[in-house]
Image (cartoon, rainbow, N blue to C red; front, top):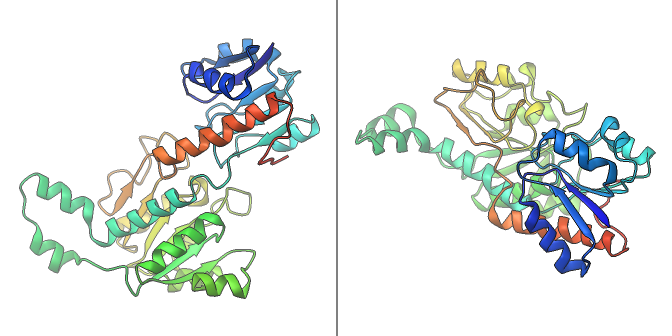
Amino acid sequence: MKSVVVMAPVPVQIVGQWLASQTGRGDVQVQGGQGTTDADLERALPEAEIIVGDYTFVHRIDEQLLSASPHLRFIQQPSVGYEHIDVAACARRGVQVANTPGVNDGSVAEHALMMALMLLRHAVPAHQHTSRGEWIQSQLLWDQGLFELQDRVWGIIGMGRIGREVAKRAAAFGARIVYFDPQRLSPEVEAQLGAQYKPLEHLLRLADVVSLHTPLTEETRNLLNADRLALCKATALVINVSRGECLDEAALASRLRERKLGGAGLDVYSSEPIAADNPLLGLDNVVLTPHVAGATREVRGRVIDMAIGNVARVLRGEEARYLIC
């Protein structure tokens, strides 16, 4: 009997059906999934050979969990991010770890563009007032102003897969693209994207829209801190669809309240679900979403295909794909 433990909140019966259909095996026991408690996991781990990780990042995979899973040989994370997994500890124990790279690049890029456009056009207050029968046309036109993305400077911090997708979409709206990344792109790729490299501080002073697309590392933690946010234009928009800890939320909220920034759009937060005392709550110049930028139905389908398909490969005795270690 092969034991698969699902830590993500998904229906375990469906996972079992997918694996059975893809492997043709009837000896795969799938446990966990939706509604699983910590106690349920503790009982399942001693026999686990494969773990499907938690895309909500609630259940960490660390040294303690690995010690409780002596038969574990493969972890499939059903998301791009995997910062809740102690990859070094897994490598020391010979446990392979894989994720699902590239599944949500376009989805996250679209979300970033959506947030910028909503902020430029004051879409949230416009909707709220109009839906109550309040006609604020004059205030929007003359007091606040409605703006185009065309001819504005979009500064991308982190020019990986998602950053490049943002560049393509923003350029299609007529924005000028500048970017910062520790690894500068080749001249050929820069030309293809129409993107100019700028040092980080230069980018922050120049950009009308600043969007974050970096992984969470010690180098990127608090990357947009109070000092760097102070470099931005008073009219600039800040978009974070990467990781909440890459941005100093208190410093951002302070500048937004003082109207030293034009607005902000966030899909990720330092604490998730968002804490009741998060300083960004209640501000009228923000667009906030609950970490769903990369969670479209199309993305979920791709994640399922990649993650469950990869687990099926391992169960069939084949080499895993998308390995991190």
